[in-house]
Amino acid sequence: MGDPAGAEAVVRTMVQLSPRPVSVKLRTGLDDDLEYLLDFCRMLEAAGAAWITLHPRVAGQGRRGRANWDYIARVRDAVRIPVIGNGDVQTADDALGLLRRTGCDGVMIGRAAVARPWIFWQIGERLGLPPPTGRAGETAPADGWEEGREFHRAFRKFVDVAEPRFAVRETHKRVDFFLHWGARWLDFGHELWRRVASAPDPAEMRIRADRFFARPQRMTARTELRG
Image 1 (cartoon, rainbow, N blue to C red):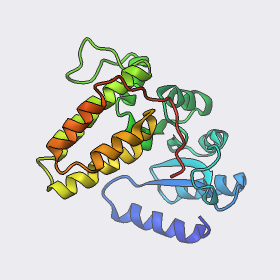
Image 2 (tube, helix red, strand yellow; image 1 turned 90 degrees about the vertical axis):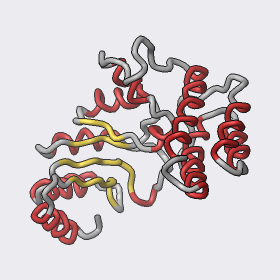
Image 3 (tube, rainbow, N blue to C red; image 1 turned 90 degrees about the horizontal axis):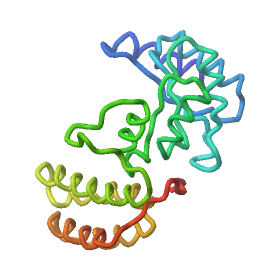
């Protein structure tokens, strides 16, 4: 974002060459300069971007501090293309609150979707949509204990999907990634990660996870996401 002309050239070229719509995901910028951000987004629109996804933190913040959702609203007002809001969305309440507060056209959910993939079920339920395939007649997890049970289910599903597709070493890498982000929402997720990380194969991963979840486990609504 320190080179608007270069960014414009990249987007314009991609739009010319790609048969698919081209979108741009960006942060506030190198500095907290709202007018610069608005001008930059107008430039992206003029260059042919189909939509913009904004994570309103400056580059130097990393994941520290709070995302400035007000900037999403300002960008939404400044351009005619869709604007997707991103940043600090850890729960269904966060996602719906971001929509209401900013008027953005959609919400991008990153690490929270790894931790609680059923967040989309929770959001859909509040919007009056039916439950996901295979869960007819059920309601989305409503508290931390129900989410803990759902995390166990999601973990087993993740291993079941990964095992036939990858060698043991590659399966381990993917399970480690799943737990690296997801388990931090569990009160004792570090212990789950410790147990599973030393498992020799997927079968043992399931056994160790089953033992861990034999006692009810609680997920917190929010956690620190810096690392």
